[in-house]
Image (cartoon, rainbow, N blue to C red; front, side):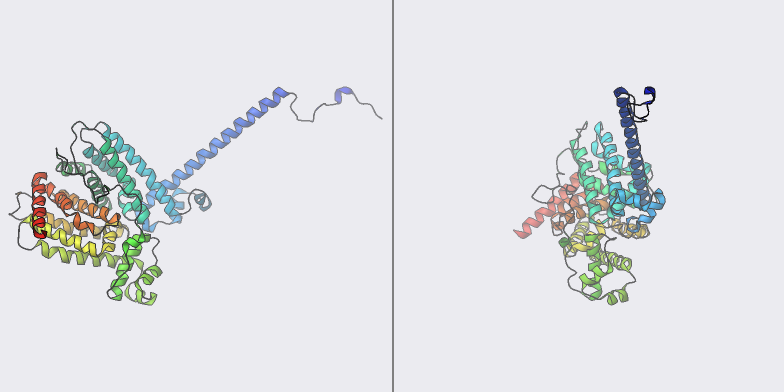
Length: 455
């Protein structure tokens, strides 16, 4: 047996730390390195997610939610498809996350604006305008595409309006005045949506919104708006309505059934999810019949919009042009408006809830529809109590408020209650033009006449 020099014999394996203290130091270094690696990975993931949310915001603002495709988001964000699906299950989920992100930012801006404001309602509306001016892509997502993204998009929009309304109601203000808070918020968002869809919002719009909102101020408390006996205020519901709300296609010619079915499909599923097969099945017609009538799904939905508008205008215009004072004719025109949508709630959902479902190319037609009804407000005759009609913005904002009130009723599955809303709606219509006292007196006289007739 050979003998070796004792100095050449190692007590531990080669490369093993010489002592316990050295091993502890190495373990600490390993933990630090792992922590740094984890922090780097977390930062990289946050950066990738932010790029995807920014890309979907840009794509939706430019092309509309109906045109969203994963490929467009990947191209804009320079993120791989595999990475995208690590964060989101679909482009729709990515859109909704972007919506929530921008909604949270807007709520934060409104919170700062109303915190020390003497008039919280006006401060909140001015914050909406400022967002539309300074962050137009985010504003388009919130105000335009929220009215294009189906029931889930509407649910997020409702939650945003409710959050802003709660901030206004919770803010004391220096000299609090009462206003119909939720309808004013929703109406301002609709008005800004129309301006954004038409090209953009200028900062001087804030003055128009401020003046319009100021006309509703009252020292009393006449604006505690409720849609039903349960105490639900407009804008406070956040759950999407059941598809059953939209009803079956019903009777009529096969083409009319297709139009109603197309509207119902878009409202219950969203434009992106709605398929020609769904429409044909609901209408009780074959795909061949569908394609004999319409080039594609878009053509059918476009025809449904046009059909609803033509029927609505045909009902309202004769009532407005009948003999009588301006206020009386507006009252009758509103009753025809409410009766039509009580009979055809699916078209109301399409017009008020999925306003921009067909994308940016349809926005000019939406503006034409809107302006057609503002003419009723602008077309005041010498028998009106006020000598001068309000500016165009006042009429447009008022029309947007009517649309918002109607939508909030429909959102709660209460189309028939649109008629019951007549006193509230007429006060909203008249107040910017004749003042709150005259508007309230007119509505009370109509209610008195109604009670006498039914007595």
